[in-house]
Image 1 (cartoon, helix red, strand yellow):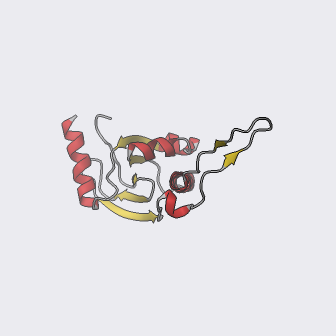
Image 2 (cartoon, one colour):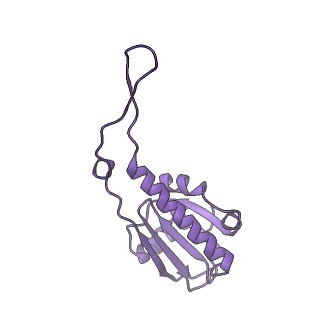
Image 3 (cartoon, rainbow, N blue to C red):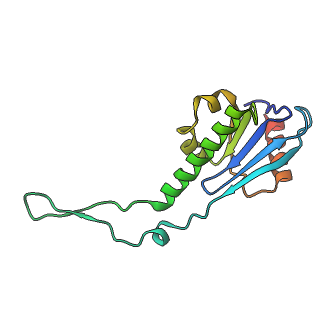
Length: 153
């Protein structure tokens, strides 16, 4: 992505597996002015805090050996569900005309997870993706980080 282009009304979605900021550009393409439109958060404790059972065991039909079954990663499943819900929200926003274009900024892991849940409508509206974890930064820092990354390219 050489130059991030954001017209007035375009959305910048900054997320990871626990939190998502939907920012709207109230400025223009030369002087973006990002304002928070929505904040989505989901607590996501560690897997040990969410599930306390020991891994299961399989007993084969023949023989005395047993093998263990890997424990479900509840933390990972919660992140996937959160990102699936966010993709659904973006689909609804683009379909209803709340925004015509959006750019995703997410940690590499979250970006990989949410891509699978993009609808065709979201794919067409997607202007670009930035693989950075900026969700914990204030909005003015996000603007600064993205402008610096554009200037460096």
